[in-house]
Each structure stands twice: as C-alpha cells, then as structure tokens.
Length: 124
Image (cartoon, rainbow, N blue to C red; front, side, top):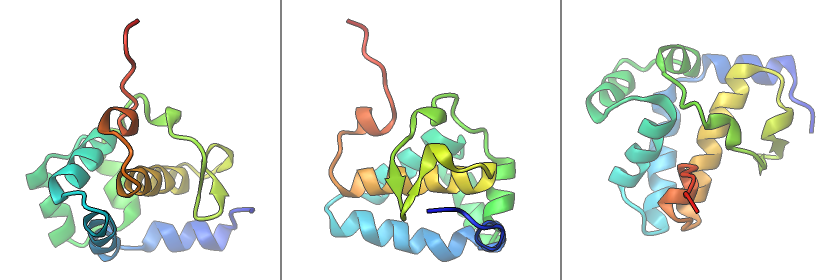
C-alpha cells in the first residue's frame, strides 16, 4: 500500500490526544496497563509521564509530538506491517514515526513480552 501526500498531511495535523485514548483502550482490553503503555511511549519518545500528560492536555499534533521527542536509537528496528503499511518502506519520516508507535501499541496489546517490544538485545 502506497502512502499518499494526503495521508501524510492528515497524520501531521492529527492531535496526539485524539488517538491516545484509543491506544489506552486497546491495551487495557487485552489485559495490559496504562503504565505499560506509558513505558512503551517513553522508550520510543523519551517522554516521562508528566511530559506525556502535558502534551495530551495541550492537544499537540503528531507533528509537534514527534518534533519534541527524542526518538530511541533502536526505533529503526521496528519493522513489519501496521495499518496496511510496511513500516520500513514509508518514506515520510513523521508517518514512519507514528507507525512505529502504532506498531509498539499493537505488540503490547497482542501480549508480546516487554523486552521484545522495547527491542532489548540480550548478550549471549
């Protein structure tokens, strides 16, 4: 599936606060916690709970959300298909970052172990 300019623009303008409740609902329905969701978001973005709540209150767009984020250096290890798009093939950086977050939330909801979600490498 090809990502269009219109799709990228829609994601850019979308408030993070409008999607966050869906993330929370999705993980809680599957027995995961708000704390685990925040851990995943913190890993990807560097935002602590207080900063995350500020961004939600301010109703920042995904563009502003990711502009302020300190993206984890292992974020590029997030691959696969989410919402019909192969993450590693998305050219637009912002859309790819939003899909990283979508993928992490999906993995959390599916019961994946936190160490795998957070791309923790084990020493053998």
